[in-house]
Image (tube, rainbow, N blue to C red; front, side, top):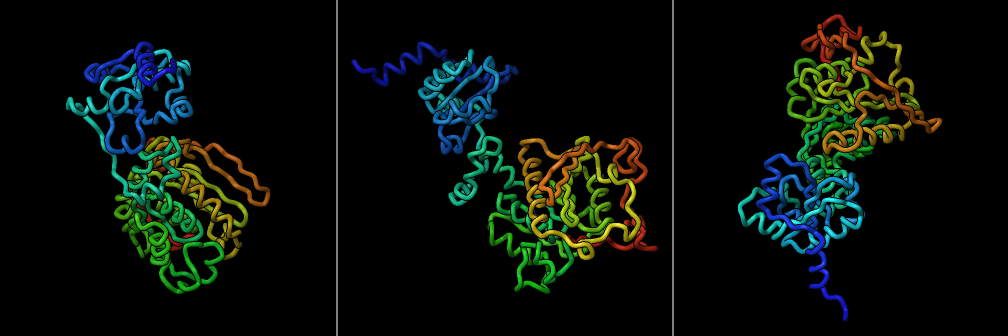
Length: 399
């Protein structure tokens, strides 16, 4: 006689212990450590789930559970809509070697009907579900991570060689609010590397040119224009409303200004720089215990010692490489996956196609983020860098 669905369910019920929603709530409220696994389909999970649950739909359970619950002795409570799929999921988990697996009777429906707390994440439109679908397939991002991206606020210092590719990928990945600060206009010589601009926009505002390109790429994104110099009179006010600062400035006064303002505000900086065929990138996060820019470079070089891209040249595609790295680091910080470049300086030599990573340590004697800081407010950065004798603003132009 052929095995029926009822036979399979009875076998699962005999093998997998069941636990009531009341008992699950009591365990959670009592601080018990266990993994709560929601095995429903994505659209069901999207409509609401038990707070703290990890979503691994039944169809991907065998493939993905080890990424969510790596230790086989971790207690697992599985639930579905009504308590059937979770029993069968429990059998699959036991066959994979998980020792302590239970199924919640009545599933999510009973949990909700009993008045227990449920969570509903930000609802996405049909277009968003399609646009970001490749992110949803990544366990490290998923729909929860995408929701974080959509809620994030990031500001680009400079809409030039680095700000262009970084901005394009931030917009494409759905970072909800992107500020752009730059007072420059598009020049024909920019077009070799500044890919948010085009021929028709030569002579127009870089900020407005970048805004038009990013908005056309992704209408989800709110682009905020800051078409002026960033200097010590406005930096704190501009940066305070953003979660992350992306620095693509090509002059030392702005680099020190951005660093100090970020330290005072407790904001991370995703930083990169380029020179000829070489680039470097890092994340300055003094609030998180990492170094700041001054920890690595306590004093600026003498004026004229380090030539600009205008004087020395730069490989156009190098901007794309380093800008893409910046965008990746921003995503890591927002969503919380991977290992951001905090305390690490990533060096890239495009001539040799080689990357290397150097350790970057916080300096306890740093005048801004050290144990006993001596600089506690924004200073005259043009004067500090030896470029003026009187206080002036530092311009935020990008490579």
